Image (cartoon, rainbow over all chains, first blue to last red; front, side, top):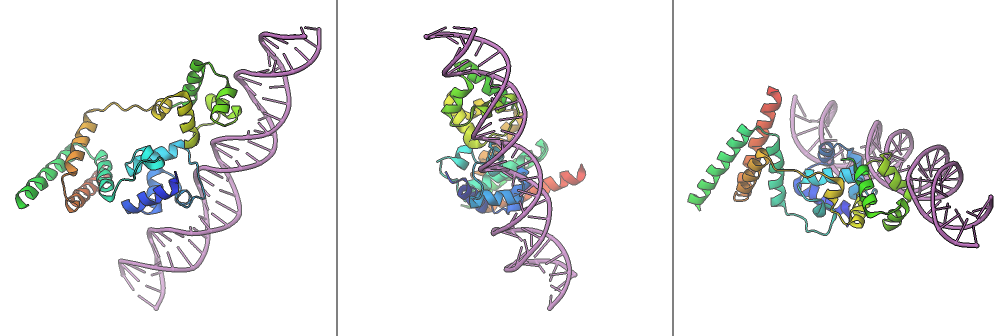
Length: 109
Length: 109
DNA sequence: CTCTATCGTATGATTTATCTTACGACTGGC
DNA sequence: GCCAGTCGTAAGATAAATCATACGATAGAG
């Protein structure tokens, strides 16, 4: 179970500081650290939910026995989150960019 | 969200007393009552998990937050799929693009 | 080199979840 | 009638989560 260890791994993979995830889930960075270190176990359900959402993993992936996602999927999920804050118009631009990248990659290799 | 209300309904449906579910999830009956009455919100994740298991519902059914996909989330999911076919390098570029868009939107209003 | 910001760490304060205990209302058995 | 048990309710105590703050180390800007 060790939520602390998972939390630490997820944070390392996403390359964020304690403060960054603390801000994202609206909690003190001290508490994030305490959770990672195991000085605090049994976080509230609400906090677990926020953490899972922020890291783009399911609650089972954060707490349960499910395997941890690799760096690649974390990057994708982080982008995914960023998309939500964009306007539909901007998202359309992003989508075109991706299509262009795909075509370029196809022809190159 | 009102976990208390859900809890009460589930308990009524199962016809159990406060003490019965308290025993089942290994917690005091007082606390079950406090949760139902809303005198305590934000139970620990572990407790929520036990309660869901005891009542035979999923955590989502206990806490309740079913999200029907709208047009926006559909667009996002489409982009998400596109991301998977990109190289890590290209994805990093996409991410920067999104960040730039976010900043522009922030400053604009 | 110095100043400043940010990193992880850590401690003591505060808030909140959770527990212990007890109450009055209501039952069923004697 | 009374006694014992269980019900939901509630207040007060305790434990634990969460916070506010500060420290030394490190890295970058000037």
